[in-house]
Length: 111
Image 1 (cartoon, rainbow, N blue to C red):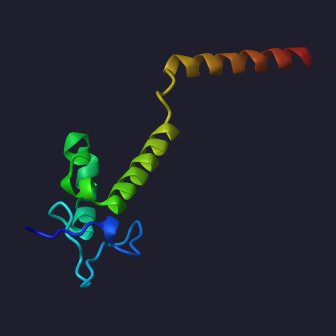
Image 2 (cartoon, rainbow, N blue to C red; image 1 turned 180 degrees about the horizontal axis):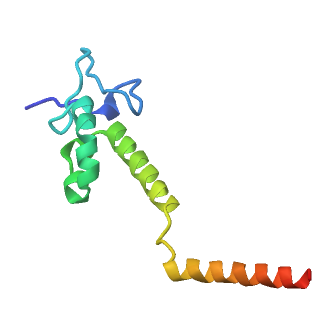
């Protein structure tokens, strides 16, 4: 029987830090240390889907799970900053025509 240490039962373990066993070794959770899992994060985040959320390390590591939730929240907020779609060229033409009409009317009023 393997005694697998999880980050939840290690004193002083904080988000973003590597979980360690009582003997000072990095804890292996779901077959990965936190450092190994975090090294894979860019590929996992870009792949998305079930392969990411079902990663065995996330099932047992509260710190990496919290990190992933934070990163996903940041990514979602960043997506909301982008415009939903660009306005059509026809809209810009209408704006330009309106500005030209207003400019023409204002110069006629000054005569």
